[in-house]
Image 1 (cartoon, helix red, strand yellow):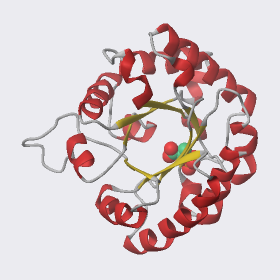
Image 2 (cartoon, protein in one colour; image 1 turned 120 degrees about the vertical axis):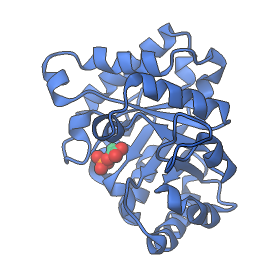
Image 3 (cartoon, helix red, strand yellow; image 1 turned 45 degrees about the vertical axis):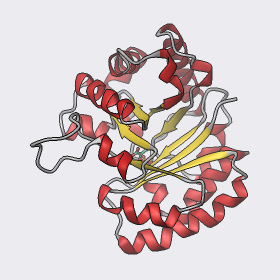
Length: 251
Ligand code: PEP
C-alpha cells in the first residue's frame, strides 16, 4: 500500500505570524485524516524551527525547500541537508522548476543534491516536469523520464522508499492551468514504468501531482490510480483550501 502524501510548498512566502496561525489550524484538521494521509509542511528555511515547534507531537512532517549540493564549508548563504536533518526535517525538496529555471539547476546538480539528502538520512521529494514548449513538441514523457534517470542515477534500489516524486508540469505551476486527470495519470503511469525499469520497487513509491491543485480539482486528480497525493503551492497558504485538498487525498 503506497503512502498518500500532501505537501505544502510555501515557496518564499510567509512570516512568523503565518506560522503561528496556519500551522495550528492544519494540525487540528489533520486529526480527521486518521493518519491516512501524510501531511508535509515546507516553509522557508528561516521558519523551519518555528514550524517544527508548532508540529511537535502531531505526526505531521517537515520539509526544507532546497539544500546545497555540499555538506559543509565555505559556501556563504547555503544550507546543507545535514543541517536540515539536524533541525528535524523529514524531507528535502529538490528539482523544483523554479530552481531549475531561475537558479540554473541542471539535472546533474539535482543528482548531487539527491545524494546529499539520502546520505543525511532525509527523504527526497524530487520534482520533474516538462515546459509547455516540450509538451507541444511531443517530448513531455521523454523530458520527465530523463530528469528522473539523471537525478536518480546511482541511487540504491533499497532507497526507493525514501524517494517521493512530484510530477509538476511547468506550465501548470502557479498559472491556474492544471493537467487533466487523464493526462496526469498517463504521465504518472509512464514514470512508474520508468522507475521500475531503473530497478526501483516502483509500486511502493508515492508519485505526487503538482500544478495549480485546488480544492475543486484535487478529488479528480487524486482518484487516479497512479496519483498518490499532491505538492501544493499557492493553495497551501490558505488553511481551508489546504485542508480540503488533504481531505481529498484521504477519500
Ligand atoms: C509548486 O510550487 O510546487 C506548485 C505546485 O505551485 P502551485 O500549486 O501554486 O501551482
